[in-house]
Image (cartoon, rainbow over all chains, first blue to last red; front, side, top):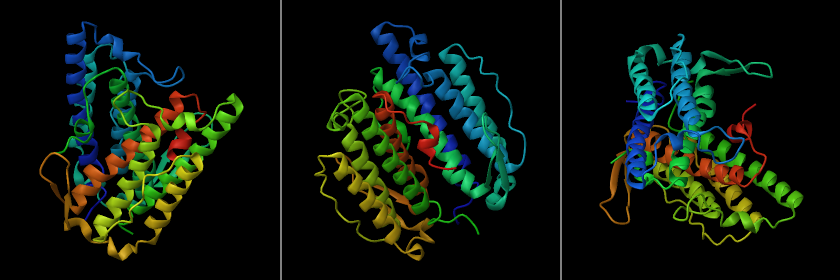
Length: 169
Length: 169
């Protein structure tokens, strides 16, 4: 088999989102051991003008479902960004995984040359071809927010390591 | 053109390493404005038992050249991890980019099924096929360390944003 637009997108997103579910378990165990409420994590930030933990997970969710939907040429499901608890964040991640797994592989295969338009807040929309968009925009952006999620937990003392990040072997 | 093992590896690594060069420039400008020496960044960490800034860049360098060399079935060049200044870190990143660009595309194309063996410190070596290794191990690991590099600069007040991370458009 050759690497393909589907194989390079959905399975990577799904594995990494699954890793986040494991980190949330470890974060919850850490909070229980140290006797603080998991809600403390939600507004944790690495800098005052960075997104907090809860938003890092929401954006990772949006980045993956937006990418896969755009490559498939369909509208992604809209999630409300109304989570207030760890359990609701878990459900958000799981809903994202379920959506990604529901997109037919053949709707993404061959999307290398598909025109992708990304609306921007304060500038003209960005225009990419599908392959460039996946490799140089959507995937790095997704990895950015998953790594920031991990970084915030690690910064707050949660016992996660590289194997938890990679979620392989 | 279809996405391929070469197109999904070297250009992604090269773009992201190029982004790091830009962040180093911004970090230097920040240090100058705030009147501290850039050497302060080098040992900056997000947690006491995490790798410091200087090591995050070295590992990003190693992760990319190791991946590309393994996919091509050649030995990667060994870099000595002896950088002590920002300028030497810049050279390390540039040397990595130059190496990646020197690897012939056709030595990486078709490496989906190549057997990849990763020696581990305290356990049996990991064994992957080339495509799995690129997508689920090498690329996420590389993105992890580049994001941590960015996170440390951001945490230290450097004026970098998502556009600097993505280095696109």
